[in-house]
Image (tube, rainbow, N blue to C red; front, side):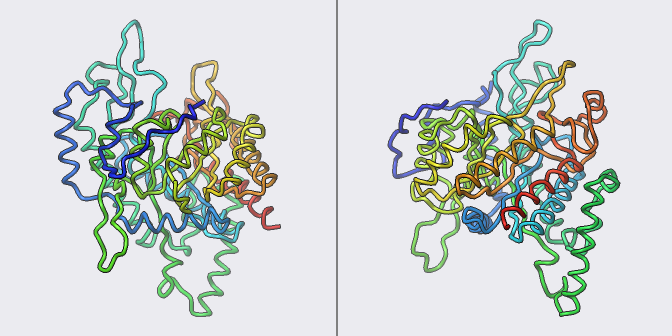
Length: 465
């Protein structure tokens, strides 16, 4: 549980480096600080990865989600890898998120805001600074932006040049995502082509094809009325945003930009984090007096905060006051990660406190991180049944509280991996090693992701009555 002691009074002159005056956690110890400074100096000269107008558009859409007029779908890799830059992983994640969004939009009859854990999710928090194998102790693997996963002294040493590789990898992935989102791949007339072969024959694949058939019929009617992809951009393009956990603050600071002032503007230009459209805080870095809160409070991006079972109502209200004192809709997304069975007791007091406070937050459910387990063979996995249970409990808690169940935050891939047990594929411990490729935590595969989308669609449809 976090302390409820109020943070120090912030300086009115916030700067991108003001986090350096606060206690910092989850930061690697670079053996060559001068090399780190040089890498950050290069990053400061690079173009922003995203732009202020995109941040403002996402905030406006999240404000609609907070008001119950939209739904947030946030998903992607636990940790991206420099070894998967051929575009296949990003394309398959984009593909399955398009499918999930169509399922959710059709059921809820409201827009789905699509945010990937992608194009920057290269840093990972760790429970310990070091790892010991065979009597040898080395720094923990903290994601490709910091060091390598191989258990050698060379790979595990934090390497500043990896910050530059992370920027280049993020830029390449963003380029692909923008092409997919705007270049025809996302055209609703391509609905049937979004299904991966291994999903097509599954029960949810068949259910998706039936839904795609109904939508295609509707598109035919609309075309007869004069609405086609040629004259209606909403049919051929989607808005797709990026996000990652804001862990490595030297990287975030170096990519912080001030938006260009507009002619006739009546307010000062905002600072924004140019590494992603949305950044979030994890359970290990949301201390009120900490460096990560200090950095994120000063940028205009939407900010997510992971909320675990140890958080009290006082903790959450203090976090909201620190990050969103003006109570601006679309600013904060509270991402609950309670664990199946714990959520019914832990979440309702938080819902009541935030509702009474008047903070216009987006409530999103992360059913993954509270449901991680290890098999007898030492393989980290998650049970699909537990994921489903926590999602159901999340929606039930909001229905009881009269608040908005606004989003879903999932670690997933569109690829045919075998990392989480269960689902209609009936994956067991014996299947896990078949295609277990994650760089860190287990992800839902394309089939399981689509299955979860249909479950959430049913819950959203029930809300509509």
